[in-house]
Image 1 (cartoon, one colour):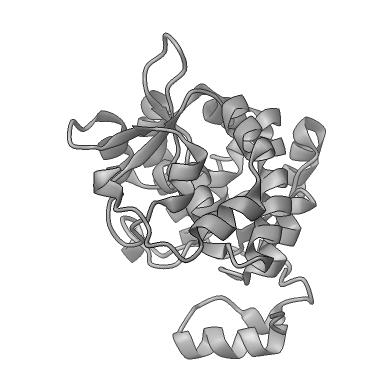
Image 2: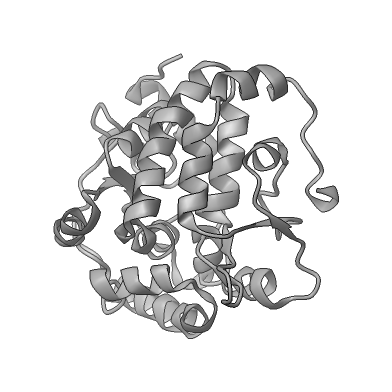
Length: 277
């Protein structure tokens, strides 16, 4: 069911979400309004400086290549400037949103190579943890990897097939695929060490280290159907991390998947326990 901007704004206000949802356009986008304070800029640099110490060692090279190509670290990014660079690389652009948006417009943006990025930044008191995804999570975490052609193609495909899956009742199956790849994905290419690329890891100082280096992290070889059946954690470290051999393997497995068949088989099934996968 399609939800109106007005109804969603009322729902978000009732939940205490901090974004200005009343300013949304019909597609749930807003203007970035580059009016950030000196303190905001300081928070951005602090977060980037601290996290880059880890991503330089633990992030997959495709993510690091994206950071270099887009130039994200010196100041809070201007979305229009970064979109101009990103379009030349993969045809993607970023659009400002006030925070989480409904699934239908989210899938539509991805299917049209537009990535929604929250337009506000956490405060100094929230450097280590924030409940809602903010600009640092969305931008530092997600945007660099969109500079990589194969992953960029996967994300567009996810918007198309994920949106269709949601309309068929497979919303949770699609959400799990996004969670375990775009948010918490790991990569182990042949002959190379384990690295991370998911945004939830890129933007988390503690979980990035745990996921890549801890002997207690549960690493599972990527299998599309298993991923879509596996439950996930929202407010704690993941109890499973799926490891891709390449972005090509991810894209091809999703291209070839019969979503209607998978949804019919698993939409009403009890999800798998990640610790037991």
